[in-house]
Length: 74
Image (cartoon, rainbow, N blue to C red; front, side):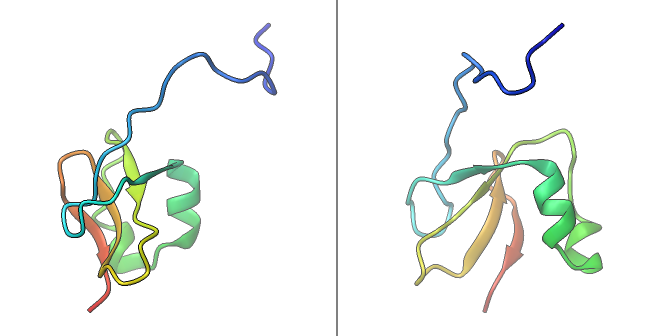
């Protein structure tokens, strides 16, 4: 049985934000599903990896590995 609390040896690839070029933070799909409004949720692609841009002056909030914005603040 796999230990649910054990840390994975698998390295998570980090992508840079397509807008500000800062390193993104990996987001779990379940987290995005719980935070997004229906309009943004409709654009969610469950087979891709999403990142969070933590740079406060950047207009991008979430983006995926294909540099598509999931949520952009204007």
